[in-house]
Length: 235
Ligand SMILES: [Zn+2]
Image (cartoon, rainbow, N blue to C red; front, side, top):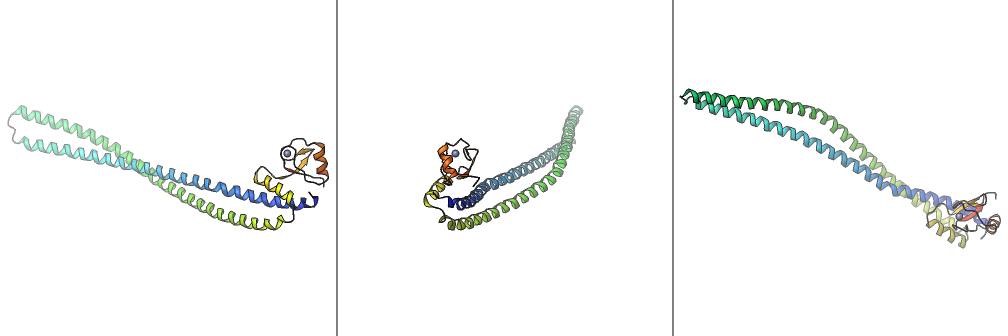
C-alpha cells in the first residue's frame, strides 16, 4: 500500500461520509411525515368526537322538547274530555292527573334549560376548536410538503455526489480501495481513522508496535482489532 493515496482516500472518505449523512437524513423523513399524518388524524378524530358530542346534545334537546309537547297534548286531551265528566270526584281526579303531568313538564323544562346551557357552551368552544384544529392540520400539510420537497433535493444531491465520487476511485490503489469499500459497507464509523496516542481512532484499543511502525511508514495498515485503516496525524 502506498502512502501517496492517503490524501485521495481521505477526500473520498469525506465524500462518502457526506453521502452517508444525506442517506440517513432521507431515511428519517418518511417517519417524520408519518408522525405528522398521525397528528392530523388525531386532530380530525378529536374534531369528530366534539362534533358528535354537540349533535348528541342537540338530539337530547329535541327529545326533551318532543316529550314536553307530548305531555302538553296529553293535558289538552284530558281537558277536552273534562266537559263530559259529570261527577265531582272524577273531575278532581282529572285535575290531579293534569297537575301530575304539569309537574313532569316542569322537570323537563328544567332539563331543557340545562341542556341548552351545555349546548351553547359546547357550540362556542367547538368554533374555537374547529378553527385551531383546521389551522394545525393545514400547517402540518405545509410541513409534509416541505419534507417531500426536501427528499427530492437530498436525493438529487446524493446522485450528484455519487457521480463526483466515481472520478476519485482510480486515484487509489485497488487493494486499499477494496479494504476501504468493505469498511464503508459495514457502516461503522469512518473506514480510515487517525491513530491517537498509539490507539486506534475507531475502536480505541492499543495498537501493537508492528502496526504502529507501519502507520509511521505511511502504509495505512488495518487495526489489529477492528480492521479500520490507520494513519498518523503527524504526517
Ligand atoms: Zn480499531
